[in-house]
Image 1 (cartoon, helix red, strand yellow):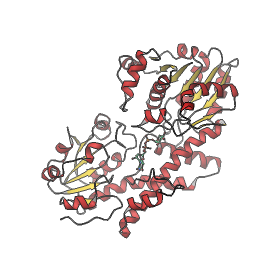
Image 2: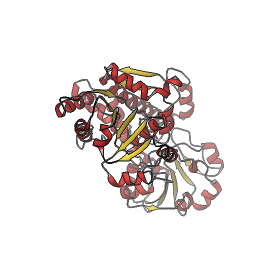
Image 3: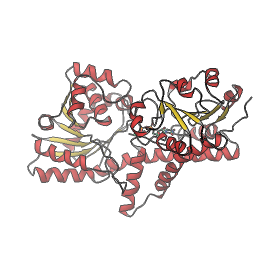
Image 4: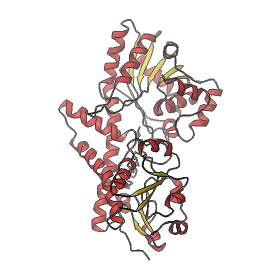
Length: 439
Ligand code: UDX
């Protein structure tokens, strides 16, 4: 089996590398010659734990290669995966499918013999059929089948998510294409992974429904957290109390500053827009999108309130800028709303992030970037934990207290416990938990 993976962004690179680990021969294709050069020199353009080693070993085994030559790769492939970007289109929230359709035309022109064409990028319902039409128009004689095979990878644990998924969803009506896909995922049958065969449209919608449901679950617990603060309850006990009910489930009930990243914000917005356009609006999701956007901004107010109502002329130390730990991804990170709001309120901001600072510099140019957590907090009037990197879970609290001007910590990820922080003499604010007074 040989496949081409078009697009070496996050999804394409991880999926291509993992398929090669499954024993498939994979050719990763990208238009960006500099990126392909770097990959050919063994340089990985993104930070993802374990990816580096997996790329190196599969390249050495001769199963994984990188090229800009789409036509040559496609002509030699049994299946071609489209894993190009689908950003939110400016203005209307729809997914921008330009790159997907461009890829479809190029694939059509290059196909040689029976080929399975798979959309791996998250694409709105109906895109698979549109790609099918484009390929037919470009190459009326083409022998191919269309498949939707969405990814459910989390940044930071993408390799494990690909190798040991909860399920694989494959949308196609073609028996022949199903056989090819079964062959590609052969390894997963051995570990009894459920593999669901559906129609193209059902598969496309399943991806959006999954991400939207998870975003809703997070938003629900975030609102419960706010309510907890008003009634003196502890959101973690509530989350555990409801999550142990198998119908609800324990995961994705951790409160925080609002969801971010490359998927949830974009996918919730795209689904809301599609649903509205079809005349079957998703009012719950519309509300989720609105609440999450407001929440990110409200977190700046929470920080200001913890600083006795004003940050004007004060220095705020921020630990963590990426939308979650173990990634360098800044896309839709809560920090992009919170930091500008603090600057606008007159604060000076010093920040440290273990992997995200290169990306952050262009997006948040008006802050001071520090070499480590303690440097960031030295002389600051308050410390904010914004992303739950492991390094920030194990701070030396005595040293933190010494470095800060005032022992004020705002923990937006609840990595510390209120009782411990009070005992250590901090004025501590977290999300959805009673705040004891400092010792
Ligand atoms: C997500 C989906 O999990 C994945 O299946 C999909 O393919 C891509 O989108 P990712 O964006 O990498 O993955 O991160 P995830 O771990 O799901 O977190 C998304 C956001 O939700 C982050 O901002 C995170 O901080 C937040 N989150 C997650 C919470 O606030 N609370 C939680 O309990 C879980």
